[in-house]
Length: 65
Image (cartoon, rainbow, N blue to C red; front, top):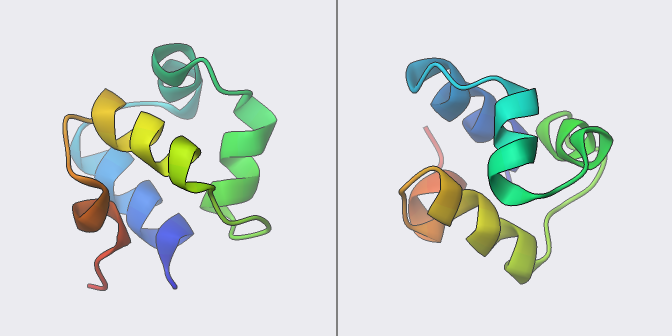
């Protein structure tokens, strides 16, 4: 699974900073950083929060390049 790499790409394309995403999702910045670096994988609930904040479907975030 390439969640972290895809998240980084999406944030760059949408010009959203990690701190902004943390505020939009009410998730901890360090937790999001761990997801982006693939140190952790998101729960379904976390993936949904991120997808909703980015106005995307969860499937779009998890797609391979």
